[in-house]
Length: 250
Image (cartoon, rainbow, N blue to C red; front, side):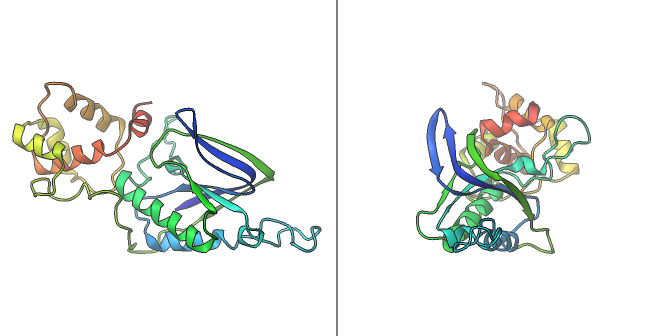
């Protein structure tokens, strides 16, 4: 898990040309969540943020790096930023290292909740998970630092923000997409073979190849996938926002 932390005099998130949230003086946090992260990383980073001394002493402004966001009564803005885990074997970024959709959102919400428990009520604002946002800020200093919480072992993960895509697609809790796919009896042999050789895993971050198959299977009149493994894959890919999908094929 990574945090890029910017000391700001103000920051705002704009979505669809409308102001979603704003803060005054405080910290803008860009949060990247990695495959394998869990509550251990959430608690480690959130507790550190509230203690970072990134402002002068409250009684002697000549003493730098002496007071925290809590000491000053300032604010936090938390924005999800999965691109912090991009890799570049080629010029095009690869996001496989980032945790996927629903699972990442659960940890993002857990991080925000932990931050709110550390600060006074009303002091923590957020972006919108998975949305395309314009993030505007005035960096104070400029001061920008980075924190990370490496994966140390079996992580205790937060509850997903939605039912897990790795559950059985044949059960009563299957999504409408999965139920329709099963009823249609669709088969896509090439993709099924690929996924059966490398079983779908919860938290898997889709690739351009996945996006191509997904677009194909989502065409009007196309038959949905049929195998349980493929159904789970299809439901998982469908859980990502249009904004996230555009990055797979960009």
